[in-house]
Length: 107
Image (cartoon, rainbow, N blue to C red; front, side, top):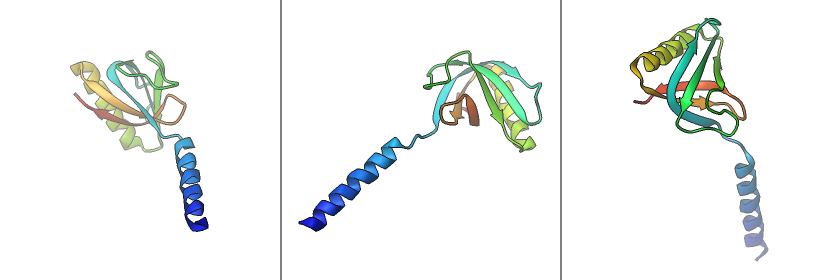
């Protein structure tokens, strides 16, 4: 009986730990403005978001900043294509910020 109580308690504690761990958020929508002025290390943009995250709302600046220049060029290309083609993007955000770590063209 103590063996099962131990594992039951262990599973509850693991479940609480996992549920308290924040996962990255995402927003999707159309790109309204792209700011390439801080290239090659930072790409900033504003979205007309279909969905909002907890901290990053519509018309907030979203920033993708990495030391990988080629990745930033590709991200700028995706955002410019989405802006010019009136397409939507999905943006993956870091926890509790408007800092992005990924962008996908979705439609």
